Length: 159
Length: 159
Image (tube, rainbow over all chains, first blue to last red; front, side, top):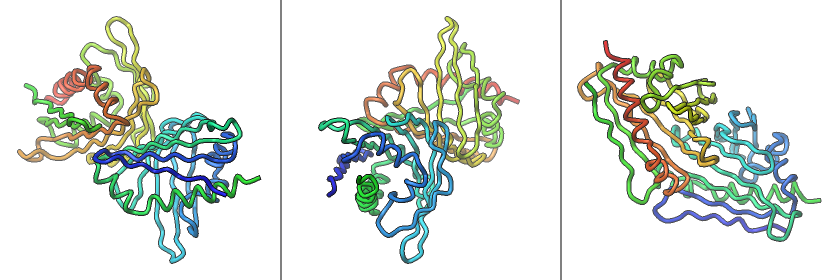
């Protein structure tokens, strides 16, 4: 069983919103973001290898990771953690090194779902340096990576 | 003598562009951004005291500084340095702690001016999480801080 991932890209504005509910409490969902060993099990598209080169999830920290697809192509991503408040908020920069200097800023909020504390909701809000950069991210398979990644996170969280 | 600071806030989009030319080479202008002792002499509005609590200008580093106005009011600002390429590019997050979690992303490019290598141009591009946040920054005296700060930077760079 999996929940829908609702991705919204408003026309003419450089934003992407992602909303996703999980059948698990906020503490468990946040732990899957906070523990590098767990992150490596769910982040990104299905079938990709994840190598977390650095992942210092504190305000002022930074991260870098490598995705390797089944054909052996490597995609590198990196960013800084501007704000980290456990089980509540992560504000981070994000860059795919294949499109250098096109950096987005992501705000990820963790709250309990309407159905109660046993369900968590993640709300992501990404801001891009231009509408074109936002459109490029949407066209480059961002949705597949997010949806498949959250599907594996469901499996990881399953009791 | 001072050069104009051209600030553009496009209608309905969450961006601010700042363009400023200096009568000094890129190396000198960048040094005034890179050396904390120099930064403290020009950053922010006239008459404010600047206390750089941390300022680690490297990719993955971070900063925090306090501005104190003549009345003794303290304004704290902090962010992360996503990318730093000396004399070329700084990409950083920026937050006024008085409006917590409203974070912008700033791209600052240093190039030689059209008149040659003896003049530098700084181009800043800030992206906000909403058009409202951008408008709030414009209304909260951002322009005064930028224009007066660059005016003191002119004085610091004068031969």
